[in-house]
Image (cartoon, rainbow, N blue to C red; front, side, top):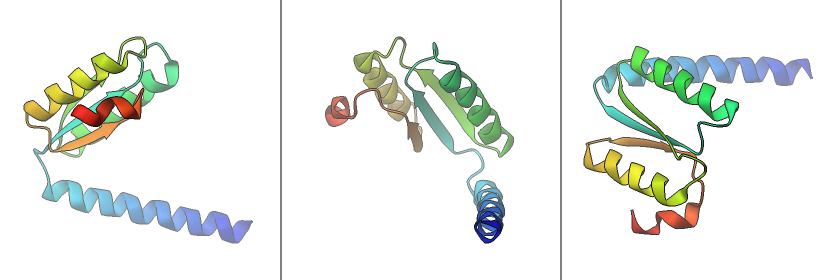
Length: 102
């Protein structure tokens, strides 16, 4: 068990280092985040935390929530992010099948 925890710690440190290195190369890149619902505490907190982390790394961030788990609204939000120039998308899809048209 200790060996497993030690490996996970090294992987986490490696990915943090990698993220910092890569993020400086992509400073100013626009990132879009689409989460399922603002009504669930988990998504609410994670959305703002992720946005803050990305902004601190130099990214421009758009954060949207899909209302009350409204897949059609989420598809419109993702389309809006693409049209506004987001080069990276982080999506927690309400309905993955709804994204066939995007």
